Length: 103
Image: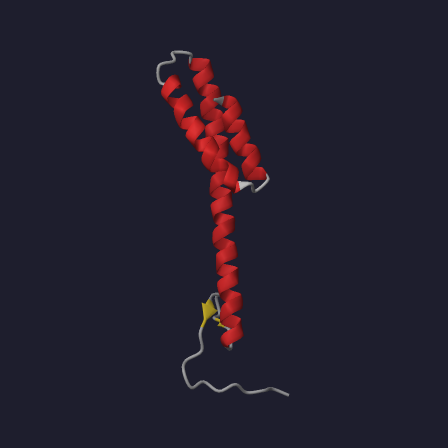
């Protein structure tokens, strides 16, 4: 089980997300075996690796969301003016707003 979790971690680090699905199926089989185990030390090692992988998965999800937001921003910029409010949040100008140029 620990080796499988290490393989998932390596796949996450390499951004080899296609490898994670097959590994997940193998992990589920191993989990069924572990449920019968009474080896507390082995279970703690597996738990530590699982927590590490969960942290990596959360980071990957944040990265995907940030990339998706950035792509949306780029697409929006193609269609017109993009502005920000006083707090740095994206704001859209009201319809009919005219641009002025300062000299």
